[in-house]
Length: 92
Image (tube, rainbow, N blue to C red; front, side):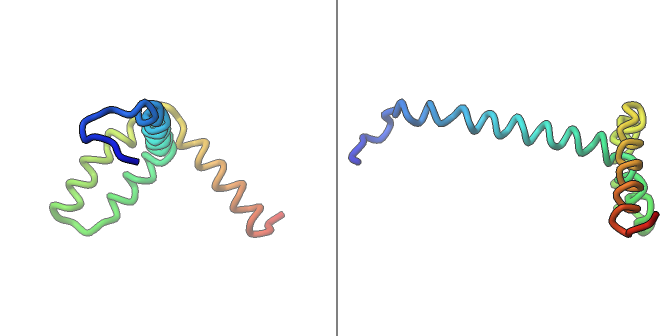
């Protein structure tokens, strides 16, 4: 287990690939999250108390909401919530 400081281990380089893959999939997760939830995030931001925080949240979420509307992914989320809500609540 004695290694000199500054030497590169071949095993360390091989373990770098899963980290890159994980970072990639985290990025994909956030893109899908924005596409599905952009409109809801904007609606939630608009319900906050008036002031600089609301202005900042609305400003940050406005492009996300526009992207979500342009991709129409928010409709998929809305339909899924409606159908899952009916199923979970036992409505017929």
